[in-house]
Picture (cartoon, rainbow, N blue to C red):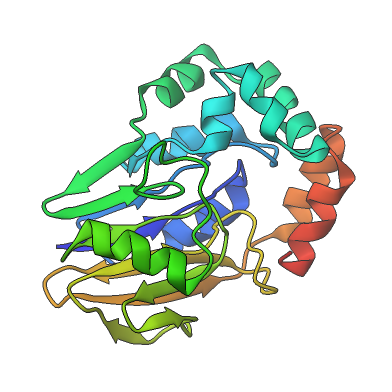
Length: 236
């Protein structure tokens, strides 16, 4: 089975469309949460994911659309964007977000937003020791995650920062983060994604340019925090 891994789209329709257009033929699209938040097109993004029959899990920004008290955990800019998003979500989009699970399975493998450790949404997997603790608990399976906006592979051997376009053979146990579609934070502003071939198993990371200027203009026109527009050009 071949998978496309998308994460942290954050209401960035231009980035999502560019990624969907760039994807090779896959059997399934997996979305690792944070579909909304920050960006100007939450309803458009949800519509495109539904039309692509993507399978998704809930992220913390998605959860905040359903439980406003979660905004207490957000920084001021993220909270402001989330409040705006709540005002423009259609009933259909809200219902879609409410239907998302926090944890997904693909045979023996797992996919989540933040971490396979409960509550799945909030833990940032960032260092080798933390990842090793999770891998020991997971056993011989792959886990796909997002949340950090950083393309990464963690194995028992440590952390790998992958280069786009290269197929990387995976061991039996690994944590794979495809990076962010809509708001990369690794210094590269191009939209990030990954393709996984479970039959090998192997992963190939990808980057694709998109119309950042249009997205920035939409953010400013909506009255969203200016920083959310500025950071897109920097990949930060």
